[in-house]
Image (cartoon, rainbow, N blue to C red):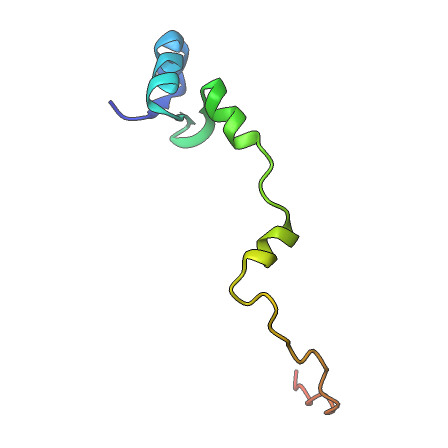
Length: 83
């Protein structure tokens, strides 16, 4: 079975929807043919809710960490733009 449910199906088979979310991962409920909500198990939600690494930690892991960059701006005048 797919992990996409029409809203009518989700309402009629709510217990089954929850069971599938717990056993098989996120379940998507559609409204008018478009994804509307995602049903997650509590453990999947807790995992998604955990804060990730900070931006500083991300940059420290970068292979470019420690490289010196020339951040000086050009002194050239702006080029004319025609409208």
